[in-house]
Length: 229
Image (cartoon, rainbow, N blue to C red; front, side, top):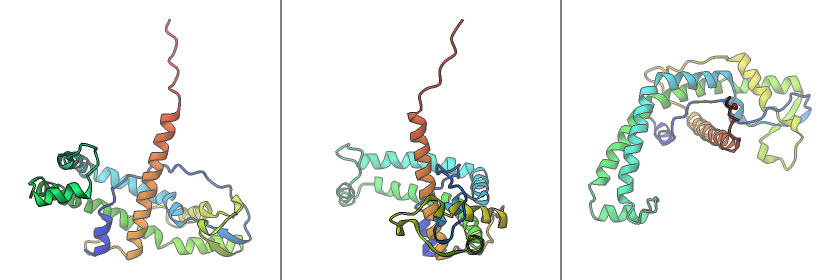
């Protein structure tokens, strides 16, 4: 197992849900365009279906991870000497100096969580890498059809009209080229370096989207109750 795969194990496994991002109306783009590759991949049908399948396939693993995370939080709380719900480096250092046995329990729980995460995260990475392999072809298809000369990342623009964003166009091209992907990697498969980085970006995107949707739901007024007769 490569060191890159190990770094990804720190990312919480998330099941894909519809992303809280608007769609840009397709329009003719000439010259310079912008695209967010991470969002383009995250909005594909293949990505959503793969993550949904993994969420179902490894549900028992995720349930165990949730239970162990609760145990882990309880152990960490024992080291929170000032009870501010923030475990600081100073508090950790104090526990180390005191040879607090809770530290060993924390290490054990973290190791078990990592072990439980491994199969699901590897399946996610395999699906992501399969989609990404078609990204260059999908982008070239959009470049050709829209006569684009230059594509820049969104943060390279001070201003760009909405129609300059071809993210949704690339998503559509990916959907046509690779509507589904496998979530079962070969036994000896290891992710490429860029796959690990992309997977982490996608996980962060999913977490941000889930938080945004949860915040929107909290802001919605409660549904009116039917009048009693």
